[in-house]
Amino acid sequence: MSWSPRLVALDIDGTVVDENNVISPAVQAAVDAVRAAGILVVLSTGRAVPGVVEVAERLGLHLPESEGGLGVASNGAVVFGYDPFEIVHSVTFDASEAVMRVLAQVPDAIVAVEDIGVGYRVNKHFPAGEVSGAITVQDVEQLIAEPVARVVIRAPEHDADDFAKVVAGLGLHDTNYYIGYTAWLDIAPDGVSKASGLDVLCGRFGIDPADVLAVGDGNNDLEMLRWAGRGVAMGQAPPDLLDVADDVTGSVHEDGLAAELRRWV
Image 1 (cartoon, rainbow, N blue to C red):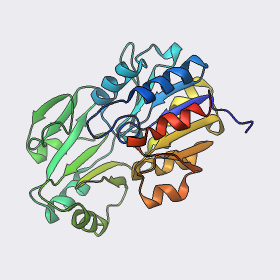
Image 2: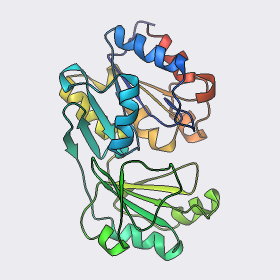
Image 3: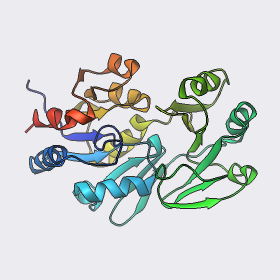
Image 4: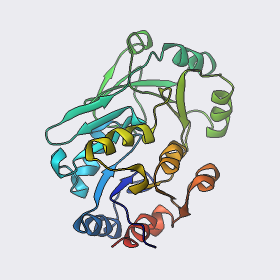
């Protein structure tokens, strides 16, 4: 294969880390080898900035922009620099209608809006370990009073499949939304995705999408894998993602990311 990536874009959860937020030695070594070969490595994730920074520090990606230190957070709504911390690009939207539509059907849901670079403002606390950064509790009216970059709605008492059916029937217009493996809903501005965030990031580095390798495992990686020159799905990815991927590697527990990265070094 004559093609080789100039930039590698990695989802975090289920790709770089497992469900316990562990980076395996094989994945760490593969990332180090790719960087040593002169290929830029960036994180592109649904996590908010604090959660991205935590993984970037462990991977050795917490760098100045001149050395490749940019990340994509919040499913593409935020592009930022690590050292120093700087918001390079952000997109916000009025989430009030979408939030109220969901709460009309799931009134006990947890609602969170991202406080960029800080953490979340929430109407009540999430289950332990599910979100990172500073947490501030407010009522729902305060949360949706102004445009936001991202909304998370979590329904821990509900079955994930039933929750997905409820959301699918809500007619959430003018938004881009993703349903996670649990009863977790991410709502973003319309047209915003990891692909749109990476497009901004690659523009700053002068890199064409055709020269990007992207790896992910969730529904929020669909646009990213389609956009990239090579899009690879993790082995545990849902059928919709497997369908659009150029290739499929092993699961996160099989160090699938390491296997894909080793192809290029």
